[in-house]
Image (tube, rainbow over all chains, first blue to last red; front, side):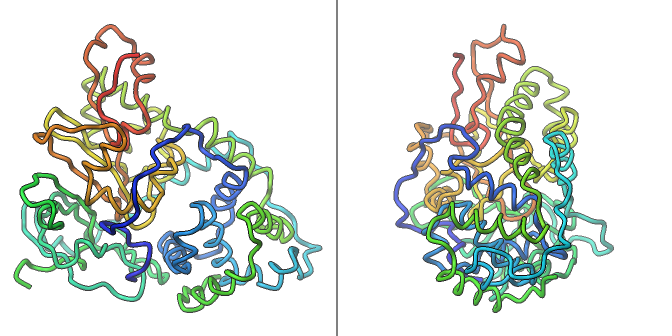
Length: 222
Length: 211
């Protein structure tokens, strides 16, 4: 979707607040939200559906709220959509269902969470029969249009010419994964000259690399 | 079970706008309370995730990988060829690093990592991303005004240096291998690791100085 999240190249956001004390969390609630997001996932959820649910946050909330707050908002939305909780329960601040039989999952120690983190080294690639259509060094054009659903083709490269820099194998295609369908498709690292993307970069030798799926790409003359 | 219904979720977000408590701390508290009531999470496990990412997993891991690559030419080769396997040698493979890719700075090339579409980050090797990495200003500007962004971080690049910006649009994650600072020949791997800043592994720092 051409949503507020697609920020690459947008102007007017001002200077970057570069100060950082190196701490992982600056408020207790940030850590709590991080932990919740790691251990409370609705059945069947995919990373792409979760990302799409974050993109669907109202623009003023997306830009106006702190980062982990937008995670909390996304979790609320996925939990309500999947039937884990209701708006009435949020208003009440407590569960309104009969939870007398509910038992918490076992408590994990730091050692067990470290194991869990290792187990979260998820791979997204797979062998497929189809050969990659494009080859390294070949010029391509990024597709001109997106669509209303989740996609990982940012607006700032659409319609622009790039060069295949590397082939990564076939990876889960996010546009379908966000709809619950796991389909693998060739994924490429694509290099765009900054001068191809931005009027003020004329003469620059800087380069922007994106990882793009095959169906995001066209032949240069298309 | 989710229905993957985007229209429904958009409606839920609009409803939540007026139903959620006013402060982030209260919102997250409400979320945890409901999940605990329903037996869906254990608060002690949340404690353990917070402690793990506050104390155990963080940029010190990435710094150790960098220092090892500086000291051991064979490890350097393995890291550039197959980063997930190379970090696994140190036990650091984990969340968001199964498709890690290492990009190396040279005299002629400077690498900068961003995620313009969300805030993808190699968690198991760098921990939680700094606030600026997740902020709209960095996500918007890194791909368009990289030299302006770098100047704000105190990195002034010669015009001859080529900037390569890596936008994390898929499940690949990027770690910058900074250049080893001059005058560090006598330092141990551990002493070298202490010179490696988090920002240098994202690309918003370049010239690491012996301390």
